[in-house]
Length: 209
Length: 209
Image 1: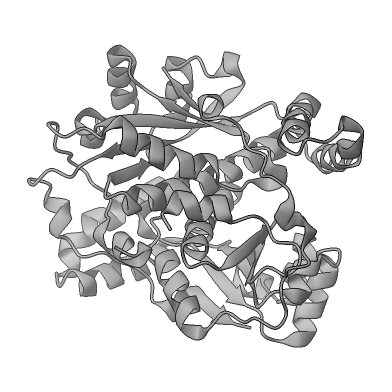
Image 2 (image 1 turned 180 degrees about the horizontal axis):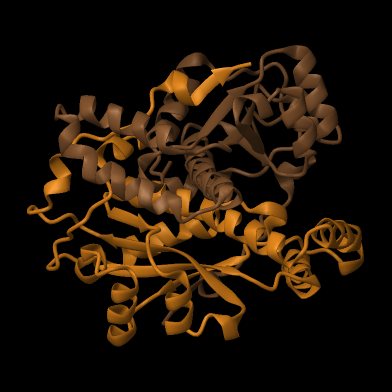
């Protein structure tokens, strides 16, 4: 299938087939596209937390008003943004660039100063919003990669963020939850599969100026 | 190419080949994936403005510190988020759903009230941030769709948003600029093509909880 066909095929599954699990190989392939997603300055200020602890999973389900995707999906992830992007974040990135590009740190100091200069113009809340924005780009890539792999995916925004942060102890890890993301295979009983997609027309979204 | 291979192939092009243009057919295919991208409640609170007015394009280039992608790319878009998401936005969506789902408006009134209830919990700035977040998901899909089509793409965040809003009169249209997005084909002279990608490892981004 082309990506357009994959997007026509996909929909926000509400009820997954609990007997079908995404294999580690397919999961790794989807994750690899997300890992390669672009981000501002390449800093990737986010994590995708794969929830395998059953008790935490149930607690997260309750924080999301018991939405059925969470209890029926094959894999549940919490997308979290970093809340403390700072000079160390940039230094870690530059360290990686030194290795990847087989160069001396000296050659990347100008770049490091440039990124730190851009970050210094943002206050704490603006940096969190900026980190969240980057996470949303990765979520877009995640949706595309899952659809291409024939895996159903439901990004879920309607949940109690503070409760999920508390359940996972995200505050201590300088993270905050952005979205829940469920992967799996649609149940044949999911009535939402039959409902036509509602989308704006091309001319409503794309306009020539 | 698989999507992973497409993501390995892509990079943030700095200099495009000015002799190569993305064809209308390829462009339409990329746009179609973006049009089908998911968004919170399905509201798609964003526009992608394709800048064909040469004077405005030059002004936008200056607002982005003369970054070479803008003057060498095949197509330049301004991604803009809606700043006035309100009950009319929801009513327009419900109108579309009535047609797509061939149902009576009555049957969707509960859904309409639910969405309005969620929106009513957000103040004006929170709604704008929410709309921007949805635009970033569409940007992630855009990056994936372009890569799959073998088209280079550069999302550009480092620009004067207020200046771009002013150049395009976005305030009057209840929009605000989020990102610039350039499409085209890499120049053989782009030195950035040879620089290895810097990315976090899988275990840094994906963590089991």
